Amino acid sequence: MAASTAAGDSLTRDARRLLTALAQPETWAIVDPTEPSSVLVHRRRSGISVGAGRFASTVAEALVRQDLGRWEQAASGRKALRLTKAGEACLRRASAPEADMAFFHQHRETELASVETDSGAARVRVDADESPLDWLRRRKGRDGEPMIDQASYQAGERLRTDIMLAGLLPGVTARWDGMPRSGGPASPGEATDRMVAARQRLRNAFDALGGDFSDLLLDLCGFLKGLEQIERERQWPARSAKIVVRLALTRLAEHYGIEASAQGPAASRGIRAWQAVVIDGGKV
Picture 1: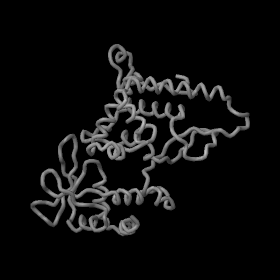
Picture 2: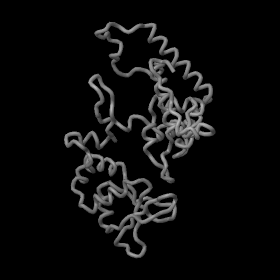
Picture 3: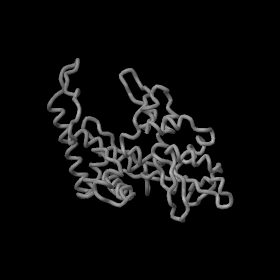
Picture 4: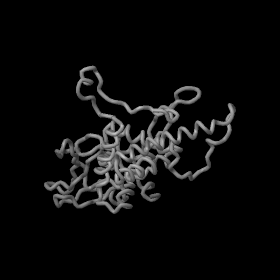
């Protein structure tokens, strides 16, 4: 990785343009059949492959030599140039907003978010790769739509909140939430009621989902396991987890009563989306 990073810093302008183009969803490059000295960039939009640029073959080979791109055998029988993990890391490093944090951004995908603090709203940079739900909401499929809709995302986040409140996950770091504050220690009865209520909501949700979906969403929303790890542990075929996860989240959203859009008489009253119920201190 260090060698690829150092090589990526010395890329030519055309090589960086090709690297940036390959980073787009559903994008690849092939050798021009009429002119082997060039490569053609193709991008899939709404199920149709469209041209997205032309580069010299030497530019493509430069990316391959530096492990930023690789040739793969496409379904059509042609070789297709696609971005590697090192290429993705190189782009994140180059686009890091702070020079001294380039190494961090190289290995993590971050985004700006607004959080509430004691002094008001503050803009912070968060690790976007922490939650698989965020990854699924940002990543788009071949149809250009996110892998999960807003209703599924809200349902997954609600389940994740209940898992945290219920205390089902093992602690791996020092816990500071038990330290007394200036206003005195928290009420043990209040903490117990919050935990019991969260566990009851989880029990109802898992009963509605069934055993297979419950275990899957516990790994996804609780232990924050990615799709590849889920497929590897369950010995599922590649790219099958996203289909099962989508079904599980859809059923979870139905259990919570969260819909992507209003249906029936509610639609005529200007309601366009049902929002998840906010959990505050274990009360719904």
